[in-house]
Image (cartoon, rainbow, N blue to C red):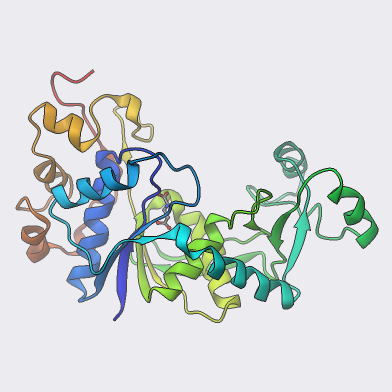
Length: 293
Ligand code: GLU
């Protein structure tokens, strides 16, 4: 069964912008007859109890999902195996760069913006031997392209940078870009709806899917929520989580529905009128409710 998904990182409570993205992911999936899956991306930045609170928030909004949420941390063996297959195909190399070294090299003239400059790509075996004594290596993809195109329901054809991105961090943890591609493919997810801050990651992920012999999903990168100063909505902007808003008497499902210009309150009611073509394309500016700081 083809599926869409919402894949939050349990690093704290979701704010109303994240909740709106979850509702959109559900609407895109359900309006196209897909299953809707929830995957808890708990391999990085986990705050204890956060996953349960996030799932409570999704339920309180009226969202439902198929099967149990998948905990990404249970998938380490599969992620490691994917890295091993890429390695056997000669598509990886060890990288010893610090963040600082990367920032310095990446600011050199002619460097592609935001791209790893390839410092460790051509190390000799004896150089690698020396560097291994200094610090543990991350594993990077030896990318065979510098750009890749994806199809996005809201952005059309989008071509973006592909660099030698990290597959395994130097603490041994599989990197987000690797885990997300392997898990989406294994879960039968063929539609990825998420915030448009991740649009620039989609070409890397679609390219990696291709290398692993998996089809890329259809993407819909939806506008983010901003505060009244035009910056990305954050916890410090006042009452922005479901619990905080409810404490002030706000009907959160109705607030999310209104932000989408859709009639109704519950996701089921929104479904009848949902049309991706008519979605607001501008960021959603969240005005704090009266009484909030
Ligand atoms: N777990 C990621 C996040 O919460 C989202 C991953 C994705 O949707 O691809 O930012």
